[in-house]
Length: 155
Image (cartoon, rainbow, N blue to C red):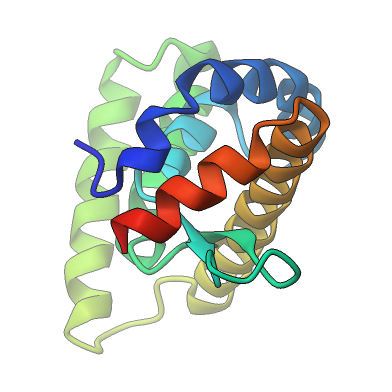
């Protein structure tokens, strides 16, 4: 569920931007499955909705850190046995990912912390690119003011 009614007003625009942004995802380091997980963990907000000159859509990525290990599991599963994803290679990858996540949370071992940070930063950049594209699309369709006003009323 959405915390903010303005997001309910742009479902159709989001679908259009999703289609247009698909090529950008293909050029990124993320698979479509990984991108879907990233988007699930991302919330979009309108910063300064009361100020038409400063208002902009931002990607709140506070929850992304918690899903980075799962992004790695998805990638491991795609590479296992020709990308079947359902074979025993996937279960081993998941077990290792879980164990590594637990060890990392406890501060034990090196579970690729720099890779984790690189993926997090790449996901943050890409979600903000998406937010910018979404705002640009809304502006081009003449819907930005309506959406901004709805966000202003809801905050």
